[in-house]
Picture 1: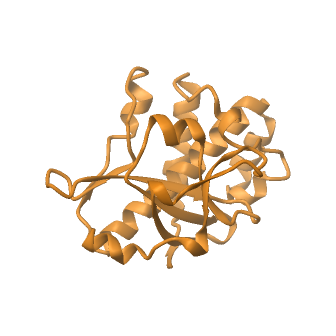
Picture 2: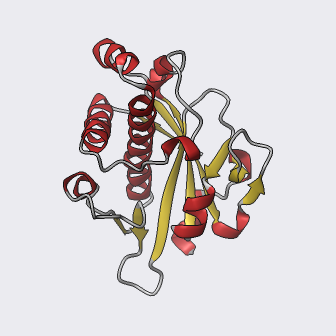
Length: 201
């Protein structure tokens, strides 16, 4: 497991991205089918500054859900990329801001490791942030329609500005978990493989 410090810049960049994505009208319309809804009681766990926290509490439920989940996902991506760089794993990432600028653009992965080589593989960073999150979770439509070769489990402690990157799973490691509030493909964090193994994949 790797522990990474979240910087204020990471949070600001992620929140700006989430707001622009949602306000542009290009956000994924089925967020509530993929993720548990956000309540005002959840918002302090996002680790926002007071002004942003109060603003998020005032927006409508759909907007609140979309912005919160895009924000969490973006922080997870930023941290995941930092870990890949720390491990000297060659990688490149799609231009996420293009998702905001072009409503027809759909990125198919969070990162490519070993790009333009026979070892090129798709990586998806999966971020949990609630205190009870113990699993890497992939929504069923994403698992089936946007498959990745590797899924990296990221557990965010946003109020404390810390992230724990537990490891990775291959697609076949994930099991259908119909006992979850929103059924999905999942694996416990403590069952993930060490990220250093990706250097030998």
